[in-house]
Length: 369
Image (cartoon, rainbow, N blue to C red):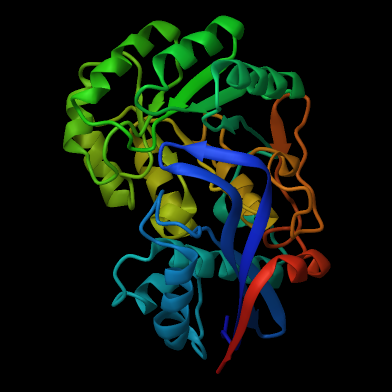
């Protein structure tokens, strides 16, 4: 695949409703759409870095800068055999995993279109439909939280994830469990606790949760291993896992029992598959996290989640959960069994709705050989 041209679009999408986590509330979501031209084929990728450096240190602004000044000059004009090969081309650039992941995703789309294969086929996926859940942000009151989760349950979601933070955790989780005694329930702290304040989370062991996601600092493995030894509920690591190496280390020190794999967080689909393989070799369950993606990133996540080791429902909700008008012509809908169908067309299997894209694009730039 000779990379001849790359277009960048800085996109800002209005959310259907606000989304609040331990690091703040958002009503819009930024990303960078990458359009890669290679030998008459056009592929798309999504860099999931948002406007704020809350979830990660990367932002849409830093990603744009790194892509323009450092990454694209290294790959324009290059002939790349496999999408994962870009990591060798960009080995001198530390970090900036989300920018790398967006670029790699576009190359997977190009490769699939060239070979007439879906991304699921290219990655070795085994499922035509994947089990999904819904992520519910922190609400203004317990009554509003209960209304939200019961509404999502009525829509057909079989797994509920609720965001928590100190002071907004045990009582909320107890109320949801009482209202929905049979639902698959989990909580996500997004690094809001310390080893000391996480003492409060021990009460969650009585609620039959699937997992407690990322309770401690994003760069911490050791204290997570201490906390996991004190809990019956499995800890799931998200922000702490940036590579297959981190996954191996976390499992060796028993820092978690589950890993959330986000291709954007770890540098791309090739690295995500590597983490999947590390975990599968040790019978450790994984699932696909979400970053409020557009249809581009959602299609990629569905293909990734079709791999055999993804045995827990992912945060890959229906398109309407997030956006009234997505930038893809394809709309992902929830099936009656709490699954979403994986695209089966070449590449990502989605097409861009340029009328919508034009309305939500803040900036565009073109780079050629």
